[in-house]
Amino acid sequence: MQNLIEFIKKYHFFLLFIMLELISFSLTVNNRNRERAFFINSSNFFSSFVYNNFYKISGYFNLKQENERLIKENISLKNSILKFSDSDNFFVKDQQSGKQYLYMYAEVVNNSVSNQINYITVNKGKKDGIVKDMAVVNSDGVVGIVTNVSRNYCVVLSVLNTLNSIGAKLKNTEYFGAVSWDAKDYRQVVLNGIPNHTDIKKGDTILTSGFSAIFPNNVMIGTVDTLWKNSQNNFYTIKVNLAADIKSLSNVYLIKNFNQKEQWELEEQTKELLE
Image 1 (cartoon, rainbow, N blue to C red):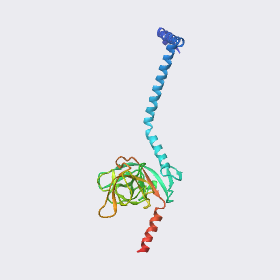
Image 2: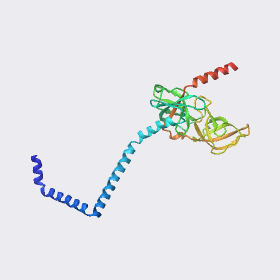
Image 3: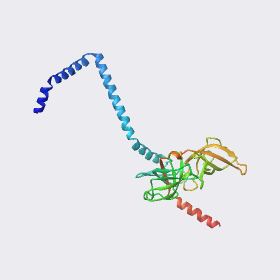
Image 4: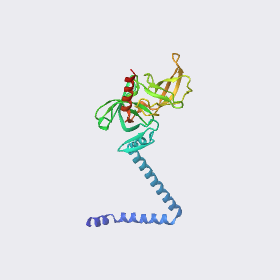
């Protein structure tokens, strides 16, 4: 208290000056419409400026959380006809085949596009229920197939490989074939097996056929770029622009088909019976 009294004594002229200035300013603003309007507008502008920039800055730092929230929402909506929530995972029932799929979100930690056989590493493994031969997609389309799994990670054989192909079909005709990579352009794959009497044109949509029990039916693969009739058979050779940009992957969905084993075992038994 004594210190406060000493402070007032020492600076009483200055404090009196500030007080008189505030009183004068208040009287001016309250009694003159022009000055009052200027003051209100200026204070509103300043407040708006501060709040807008505050929200921009806070929004920037919250982008990661917002992105993760949107990804989880996207899982529940993607190809969904019937969905049931289970923690961070979502069950999706395919309308046509009746197969039930589990979609699981994962982040890409390693990737390649420049080899003949390219792999992608993601941060989900055995502890998360990941197994070999699960399909991998992103929000745009097909990415690859799980080929190896450890406790915390799995390795995905990218669609950009020369080893295998993925069952595909032409959306507007349901004619089916297979897409594979010719190791030329990481943005394109080649579709074979579409009869050359089919009405097909540039821009037509190519989807998964769902026949392999790995990928669900009707997952986006890409769109037709160029095509020509193969002189050695009755099928087109079709260049397809991939919907998913494999080179810029950051997030993917791993898809488990709970009927996969049953379908494969039945088909294998049928082959043995016919041999």
